[in-house]
Structures are given as structure tokens and as C-alpha cells.
Length: 295
Image (cartoon, rainbow, N blue to C red; front, side):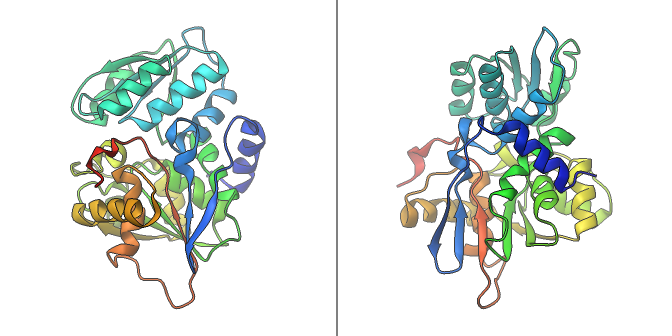
């Protein structure tokens, strides 16, 4: 099981290659961790850097499957570390993310309508180092370095969850020192379903946040950590996610993707109700989005 020592080792390994992103207090007791300002636009750059730096990378380089953000992180990290990268994405991946992949120098292969199909195609490229988007110890530990940057700052941390690569790292970094709450869309709730069934299970995937939170099955690492830590899990619907994303723009001039807004939707919709005086950090973990629909 990934633990604090693994996260601290990852922090030392990737130091100087990732940004320490700001933590701001938007109003009393309500804080935002601005991880969407990370290189390549999401937290996944932390995990991808740690994965590559802790591995023996073959001449063929790395290969990843992604709804978008993990691919962008892979492309950025590979370019920074001077290794080739190939990224498989579903044909439904947002055009803004696909365009950025090309700009970062990755070879992009679009296949299937969901992450699971892109994943299956990527796994056939056995000559390259496969970098799992979320269910990999080095990825989870690297992502957890975000947690080290907010340690001791709040009572509760709200984390948007797809496959679980971020919340797994946050649990490893902060368990015992903060309450960690998983937030998932009703229509893409792989970890919530796993916790309810007692094991990861396949779930249907749809909705406005499916491009970034659309894992069909929660990762084993995240499930193990979440079960062991006894974390709370809440669900939010698409209307709440869209509203939370719009509120972040209207009230804070923050532009994030729908998957990121899901974490804030837990507060704005009342899916999570803090106790009086409870300090809450919402992780704003990704901003690879088209802002054209924000009025």
C-alpha cells in the first residue's frame, strides 16, 4: 500500500520539475488549491514525472492512454525528460486536449469512444513503457505530492475522482491529519460503486465530466487506500457540476474543466455540508477545457 514515505520520496524525485501551486482562501473557511496551474494543466504531471523518473525507459519511450489530462501530462513529462511519447485517446476526447498533445510533441492515436477502448489499444504497444493514467504506484505517489503542499491547512479536503489516481495519493499524504471526501458524478461513479460493492466493478460512463472522470472501473490502489482509510464518498449530478464551474468563473474568475468543478459542486449543491467552523480545501485539479461556454 502506498504510504507517506512513498509520497515524500516522490516529492524529492520530482522537485524542480513541477510547480508548487497556490492555495488561496476564497472566503472564510473555504480554500482552493489551484492545481490547474500545474504544468500541462493538471495534477497528473506530478505522477507522470515520478513514473518516468523512477523507471527504466526503453528506447521506444513511453505510451499512455487517456481521456486527455494523463496524455497531456505524459507528453509534457516526456518532452521535459527527452523521451518519445505516444498517447492513445478516445475519439470523444475534447479537441482542445488533442490539439495540445500534438503541440507537446506526442504521437496521438485516437481510438474508441471511451477511455477503456483507448487503454486496450495502448496496452498492445509492449515495446514502450506503459504509464497507467491512475492505477500505478509511482503515479499515485507522485500525485500525492500535492497533498504535502496542503498538509495542516484545513480540516477537510474535497477531491474529484475518476479512476482514483489523485485521491489515492491524497490519502497516502494526508490520512490521519485531514478528512478526505471523494466527489464523483452520478453518471461516472467508479469509486463510489467499488466502495458500495466491496471491490472495483465496471460502471457505465457518461455525462459532462466523462472526459476526465470517466474511468469505467476504479483503480485497485485507490480502492485499497480508500477502504483502509474509511473515506467519505458523495455524488453530484451534471447540473450541479455545470453550475459549480460557472460559479468558479463568475465569482473567482477561475476557469476549470467540468471534472474539476465536480469537487466544488459538492459544496455548492449541498452534497457535502461542512460543520460550523470547518475549514475545507477544494482541489481544483485541471483546466484543460474550452472556456467558450462560460458566459
